[in-house]
Image (tube, rainbow, N blue to C red; front, side, top):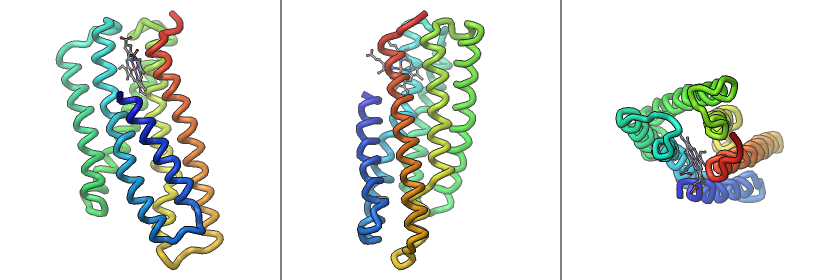
Length: 209
Ligand code: HEM
């Protein structure tokens, strides 16, 4: 369910970007699409946040790692708190609180990504702490998704670039920049979909080891 609501909404977001980069549309139309995109974006973000506790629940059932009640409770707390953070960022958009939460968000993405890539990578190399190879690779790729999202969020920012131009600030150079940044964002999004599909495939098929 979480995978479906994640990628389903992400397709809508991806298509919205194709319209947002179109300089033939009025600034108002593009700004409205950007506003809509921020709401649609809540689905991928919250589903990704909740996939960790759900995945840990599944891993516990399969006895892939001894996950105690405390660890599971921590995972659910983090998943729900991270979802609430995303909702608060949209609810308080433009306010200092939203800006602070965005910094917290990036910090968490960086740390969590590094943590899961380390656990997965270490397990692939040494067979511990995660014994099953498919699960170790899944966790490594899961960690890499945090960094792909972090990269998309920090490096490109086509929406902010467009909004900064304002209703009367459109120039050929500015539009070219928006197009370039949007194209890069869309390309990285496709790469992320491939990685997400691989993570799902590993969980469903458990192909090796
Ligand atoms: C990008 C994130 C993830 C996606 C898209 C994803 C997707 C999936 C899908 C589609 C399945 C197959 C479910 C089924 O057979 O009905 C699955 C299985 C599984 N996933 Fe994930 N998963 C993700 C992250 C995680 C994480 C972080 C964990 C653990 C911490 C995890 C643990 C598992 C386990 C243990 C299974 C096997 C369940 C079973 O066969 O009973 N997943 N995953």
